[in-house]
Length: 256
Image 1 (cartoon, rainbow, N blue to C red):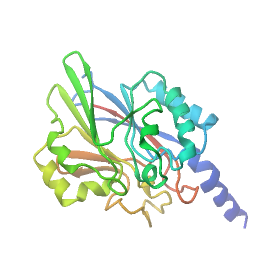
Image 2 (cartoon, rainbow, N blue to C red; image 1 turned 180 degrees about the vertical axis):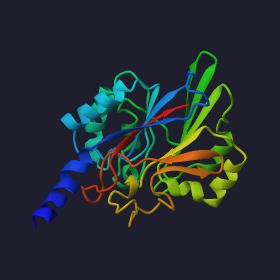
Image 3 (cartoon, helix red, strand yellow; image 1 turned 135 degrees about the vertical axis):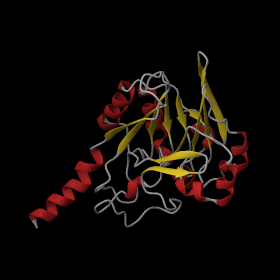
Image 4 (cartoon, rainbow, N blue to C red; image 1 turned 180 degrees about the horizontal axis):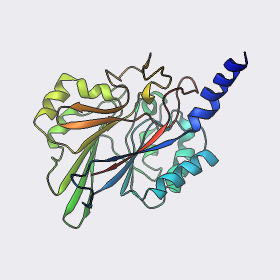
């Protein structure tokens, strides 16, 4: 009984707050000055407390060029003020917000979502220039609950020596869709980003017995898909059941 209580306490109150900063250096050489992008997925904000304040401080301390909230930042309409406070706590760094399934399912007014201080990418592109280098980010609507414009992929900027091209789409099952694979097969992107899976949220020895619809074959980490390397984030928050086991929440940092 003591062990059971201890395990329950751990999965409910310990691991969900053990947020890990995971760094991925994708630069050809470590001395090359490129871009630093921080991905924060699946926040599922339940308030704006010391936990969220500390998370924002952690992100700011990473000195990113851009912060990407890759879906499911909120899952209820009354969470918009919390999201606004969280984005404000991130300071002056550009914040890009790509919708997930829960923004759709909760009936969030996307017109209001545009007013939280972040740039909402709903089948849209965003760019940042620095000297002779350019970062281009395309954010597509969610594959599970929204309407991603697959035809926009033909307009996605291709990666070159001076251009870094990133594609963000919340549900990773999108990348196994036949039409998507066909569109991406002839392109070369720097990075593709998803979330949605929570890394399984509850796993046993790395095995996830369940991932949400729209996850496809993906659970967490890097995968090779046509046109890019896809990174599936374990996310920060929880959904359905407020627990984690064997799948620590993460903030992912990419340098490229």
